[in-house]
Length: 99
Image (cartoon, rainbow, N blue to C red):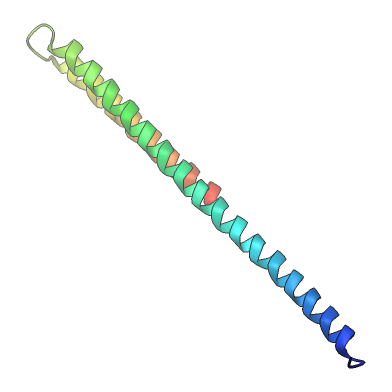
């Protein structure tokens, strides 16, 4: 056996272990990024579904008497504005979490 064989083996083993640690860290970072993106998208989808449900409920209530009044239109506009603000807040919050 060469006298440098143990030194070379040790250096190779240390290099391999270091590269494995770095590679694992990158893998965990990628998995974390993917999970964060999925969570952000899911938050936006849930906020959108919530908005659609509120608008649907408003429409059924407003249409119950056969006509929609100005007050009911203003109430519907307020529901949509609040829902869009919630979606915008979810997008902003998701963007900040990803950074």
